[in-house]
Every structure is written in C-alpha cells, then in structure tokens.
Length: 214
Image (tube, rainbow, N blue to C red; front, side, top):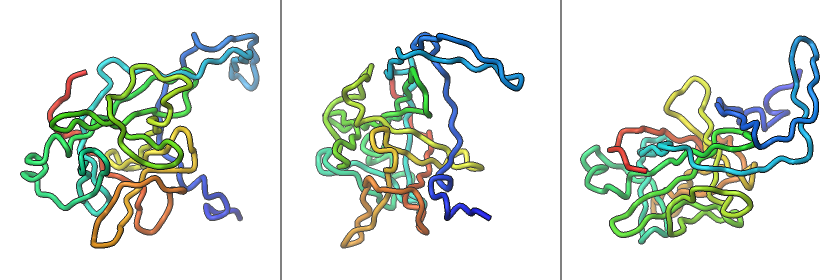
C-alpha cells in the first residue's frame, strides 16, 4: 500500500479557496462527461494577478514555538523573537505584517504578498533567485510577467484555522520557514520542501493588529 512517504507532495496538501476568472480564458468547447460539464480552453490564457479590493489584512506571524516575526536591520532581515503582548505592541509596526490577497486569472491557490511598514518605509517580501529578502516598496497593484517573486500561495493546515504555510509562486517546491542559526537567532528563510519534525514551514497567523488602510 502506498503511503505519504511514497508521495511527499501529498503531505503538503492544504485547504485552498479560489475563484476562476472566466473572462481571461478563451472557451472553445464544452464537454459533458459523467453528469459534469467541462470547459475546454483555447490557447489564450493570461496569467495575471490583481489586488483584491480591501483584500489586505494585518497579521501577527508566529512560528510553531510561538516566537513572533519582526523585521530588523532596516528591513534587511526578519527574525522570530519571544515577545509578550505588550512587547508586540511596543515593536509595532515592525511586528505587523500586511497580507495582501490577489485575484488570479488562472487560479491555483490563494495568492498573497507579504509586506511590512517600518517607521519610515514599506518593504515587501521577495524570493527572487530563491533568496529571501525584503525589497523596498509596497506590494504591486497588478502582477503579470514581472514581480512574481513577491507572490506566495497561502495554504491552510487542514483542521487548523490559524495555522498556515506559504509556498513560493515561482518555486513551487519552496516554502517560507523558520531556521535556527547560531547564537539562538531564529531567521525567516526560503526552504525546499514543507515537512520536518519541527514544523518549520508552519506558521500561526493571528489577524489581531489594528486595521491598515488600503
């Protein structure tokens, strides 16, 4: 009997909700099979993303040990630190991450970009060339062939409303993860694969900070 170990991708399966934009697809035929109507698309399919109006949510992100994600070093790095509720508030807005939802013309999941506002600037998370970094600027309104490095698929862990994984759009085998480095530093990284004993690619997402305008 086949097990999840035989199919490692299956162990990463998560709950996803999305809508299909039929205006972006050239429907050339219909096929009725087993009481199900299938739409057969032609060659004109535009892979584009656009911000969902009022689709941004402010969130506190934690690793599975409860450490809070905070941006440091003038936006160059994000680390996980132990914080009380008062410390989270005191370190705002660097502990408040904006999860921007996007509508995808050919949906594969819940597409999001992750940004953070510091006291002076806004930064958006990028995984360009499989290297995770925050680049200056807000998440773009529309994304086609460019800037896809800021897109991730937010996947809910089945059975847990507040536990998520974030899979890179450009590199489908890579996920955001927490990695412990020297001197007790826990750093946000991009990691290949989504399964390990520590649950490093799983995050607790609490939409508990004050609302941030569009």
